[in-house]
Amino acid sequence: MSDMLRVGNASGFYGDRFSAWQDMLDGGELDVLTGDYLAELTMLILGRDRMRDPDLGYAKTFLRQLEGCLGTALDRRVTLVTNAGGLNPAGLAAAIRTLADRLGLPVRIGYVEGDALARPDALTANAYLGAFGIAACLDAGADVVVTGRVTDASLVVGPAIARFGWGRDDLDALAGATVAGHLIECGAQVTGGNFSFFTELPDGGQRPGFPVAELRADGSTVITKPPGTGGAVTVETVTAQLLYEVGGPAYLGPDVVTRLDSVRLSQDGPDRVLVRGARGTPPPDTLKVGVNNLGGFRNSMTFVLCGLDIPAKAALVQAQLTEAVGPDGLEFTLARTDHPDAADTETASALLHVHLRDGDRARAGRAFSAAAVELALASYPGCTLTTLPGDATPYGVFTADAVAQEAVAHVAVLPDGTRVPIAPPSVTVPVAVEPTVEVPGAATTGPTRRAPLGEVVGARSGDKGGDANLGVWARTDATWAWLRGWLTVARLAELLPETAPLTVERYELPNLRAVNFVIRGLLGAGVAASTRFDPQAKALSELLRSRIVDLPAGAADSDQPAPATRGVRP
Image (cartoon, rainbow, N blue to C red; front, side):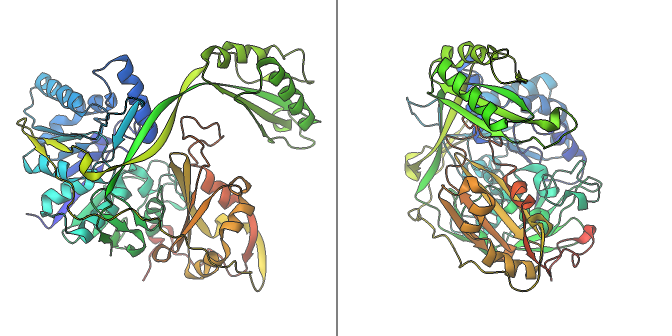
């Protein structure tokens, strides 16, 4: 048994870089290659696929990717683990067997099921399973393991359990592997993708490589990437991903609760970051359940408002459309993209986005879009639209639920067809609400300068159902000393006014010099239902960084090391 397990990632979402599976297999030594396909929105997409064809419900792209690289993986003895099975892991396993037979390749396939729950009132309802089913398939010699809805990190934790022989009580090791899984699950995001300081990367962030986690038996990990690939792996790129789509310091998982505030990062050489110190506690007594339903139908039209009297023009359209189709489900958003005394039409124009959601497809469809178009010669001066009249489309609503661990029939189906029940953890704890950390707002003392907040901090944001998270980290110890007292919930409401009426939780991660905000309800009924301009809150972090604030005069980036070693800490 090797003292190291090299796990790569080749997919962070359904639609990620198509060539990544082959690139990673060709890029260097690996033991396991994983692929994550199942965002919350993806489950809705797969649910609609399955409505059209009961044999579908899995990520079809994975099959096309596998056709070109299955032989390479088998030749190089790299095990493949993916949640591309979606709502139909057995169906994907059968499709892989058919593919392998056509290619003349002997392959042992295991799959994990039991996440699908019987909810007659839901389009999809799936519990987030843990990693021990994956480990059972690997212990039985599987070359490929397919799962449905497991936690994203389980794709890495399962192979680590199989390699190192961890049991349910190896909580710190499981926590360390969970951190590794969280770090590489989103592919190139940990190697410089979507990175606040992308201009400092050696290639300017043009084509970041996909990541590799080198796991050890004690749960520590080195995050790296194949040699010669773009992007970079630094303490800051890893910090950015560690803050992505998390809540409080207690990171709940089906096999372990990982204390993110125990994790320490240090540079371990060029494009190598050592991740250590993760502490684990017993898992919760419930599993998260993702529930998707069809919420109705939606349609959108956008009016261009140019020049003078922008608010009055918007008010006229609002009154006219409300009279034409009725107020129910109508939503108007005025984006003031216009500039005074502009020299061209585009920079002199604002955009009025009009959305309609309704259970009646006819009302949300042509009845609405035609009413908008009919205003072309009968509304404000300069009336024009960027959208053509069209029909309504269905949208989904995501909600999170919980189910007792022992109520889920977690099953590993081994390559020989044997079905092995996976027992739930014997020691669990009730889910507790973690108190938020709010410190008194600190006044900035001494000289200040007006500048964008993003000059001295990085940030990363994302979605979880109808909520958003926003993680912010300081680049220096001095900036952290200022930031943790300055960036309060009240300050966030000043900088991002849309958060002011919402419940906002604030947590500190001192080892990362970071604060994380969870903003409840920012995305309404979830990504698929949101009419927000940034429906997944991916750009919320960059909005915050762009705000002009009073920075301490000494808060600068000039003491940072060169890009190749940026983020090194003693």
